[in-house]
Image 1 (cartoon, rainbow, N blue to C red):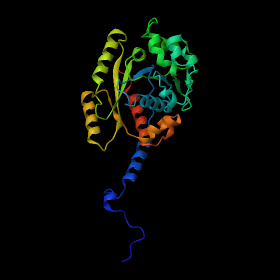
Image 2 (cartoon, helix red, strand yellow; image 1 turned 120 degrees about the vertical axis):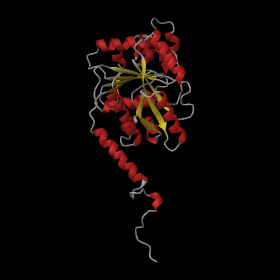
Image 3 (cartoon, rainbow, N blue to C red; image 1 turned 90 degrees about the horizontal axis):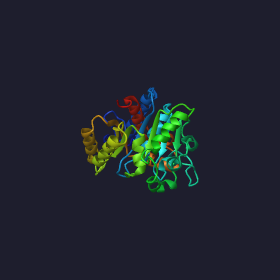
Image 4 (tube, rainbow, N blue to C red; image 1 turned 45 degrees about the vertical axis):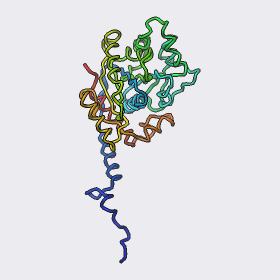
Length: 307
């Protein structure tokens, strides 16, 4: 018996509507892209300053700071990323210079350098800027100990920059912290009003979170009464595993008001982008990871600052 020239794929490879999983994914991505393109995001009436923090390493802090910043800049907001991690990964991902001899956030904190001398425009978007970190920041923890108002030096620099700059104020500032609670992270908490916590959808995800919340409360009580944990973003989500679904549900149960509805999936594109000195938004705009960060940024913008 002669086989047909173009046999249909077996039923197992098709949905009930005859589409393949790949076709359904492409269709869904197109729908998400069109929905994002139709949105006009509101701009905050005054600068929103976020500290992106989690004492647990490898949860996507830098990835989240960089990609939310890029997504908001793409929507038309003026955005600043302050790289407070001595590894300088946020600086790398935004494509800005951060060699050892580059004037950096270290000079702002330790040498009182004005921020406008340190600011660099990211090649990603015209409205996206970065204050880079260099290797000198690794010793800043020790040098800050003997300085006056050591916990408030970043806030003072930001306030001075806002007062003296002729440029339009930034709509958003994201401060990328190291994964430890030292003077650098404390400076970030004191300078910010909102804390954004990325939580990976994996085992031990909530480990250390209660201690982080206690530290935020201590900062609020003694150093920054305006500080609050406003946002939680679930990252590295793998829908194929029961564990990821359970972690996501647990976090939403404990923090129903703070967790964004958008969840960031595990994505090869998100992992690849920094090696090209780019955010995933500019590296592959149409990838699921990029669309997720654009949706998270839109949700962040629509929610507005907490009262």
